Amino acid sequence: MVDDLVMALSSQLKEIGMEIIPKGVELAVFPDELQTDFTLALEMTYGISWDPYTTISNMTTEPLKDLKLAQALAFVDDGSELIRKLNVMSNDEEIQETYSFILNEIHDQAIFIPISYTREPVVFNNKKIKEYAFNSSPAYIEVAEISLI
Image 1 (cartoon, rainbow, N blue to C red):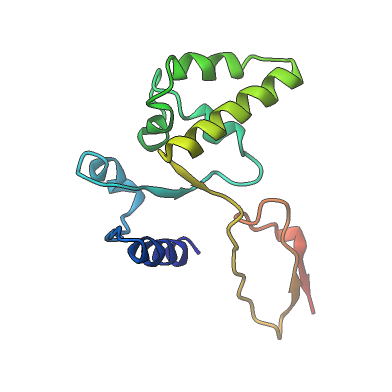
Image 2 (tube, helix red, strand yellow):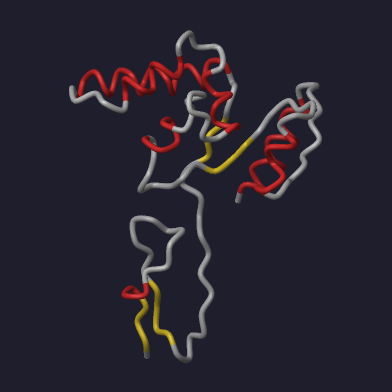
């Protein structure tokens, strides 16, 4: 899914004169890659069960939790303080306004492109398993959702 998106994005950018060279890397070496010269980074978010809370909470630089995500608010004054305040807010309207600000900021600055709602394939032996029903978090297999023949 992400590879297809990267190739489509690369093709579309090339049409308007921007050439990017896609390079997939393993998660373990990604921090080292961030120290090199790159233009764009794409990554899947934590998923339905944790978005947007975990993704945005990890954008803080103090303490640094995720080097890639920390760059998302690099140009926001006191970005880490904004996230700290967000994590203890109790007013729903204030929480929504803060999430909206952060998501609009990373969109407007094109600093980080969070990718959510990816598809997860399932492969099974249909002679033994009747069907599988995905739960609210498709990345995790819910054994109770497997129907045997």
